[in-house]
Length: 156
Image (cartoon, rainbow, N blue to C red):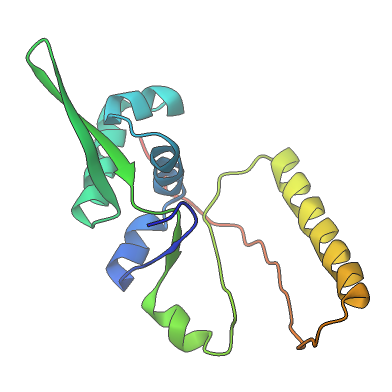
């Protein structure tokens, strides 16, 4: 699967990845394979909590074992995520006329939220201008950007 390829998932898998902490784990393990302990250290979270989440993601086929190291008799499994972009089964039905549909569960500071919003506005402005200069045949599209607050459960 390429770095930005969409992975089709079941409703159960969609529920499993909907937690913002798990989304962050998925993103981290897509960039670099790590053990649950290394992941916990980078996130500043309890190792047991992260181990649990990694096991749930592995059990539901979102993560895979990249490689196994044995150090001083201890077996360390390095996990990697299969994708960072996912498409659930209801998305195909709900968005039948959609050309593209993406979503992500992110943990953002107010600063990052503002930057994301501004960058998206700039993209809309950029492509609005480019479409006026384009000479090839065009089709009408609606491009939407929506941010919803997600109430997360406490992890620890």
